[in-house]
Length: 154
Image (cartoon, rainbow, N blue to C red):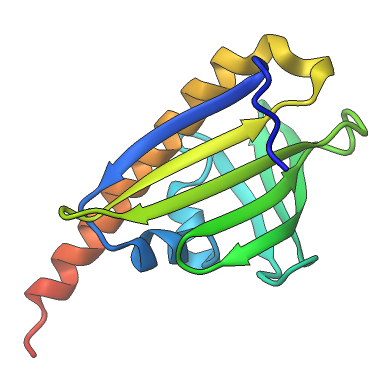
């Protein structure tokens, strides 16, 4: 259940793509590698996109491998995704992230709610900034993919 505490990061983004396309980008390793943690070197992306399935995103941060891990809690294509999120080697604390996607006339609207563990609420603004950046990069990746599909002969 979502907690509407002040420590939450909530960001929205509009896409000119259907909800199914945007939702798929969260569960496709190939696509995740293109937009997740932009500007950083992703060393490993492994996901098991099933309820209780786990994921691991290992990023190189100044020569240190940082493993972001979590477990999928809800997968309701194409409208809802929820998962835990944490860095076990740094802290046992975990957050919960909810992705809600609704179709619109122009494409879809994604709302991401990141419930930040109470020990880490001073990072809400940084979390907002990071998710906003990733959602913009996701849009660019989807736009490029859509352009290639439209340019291919039918």
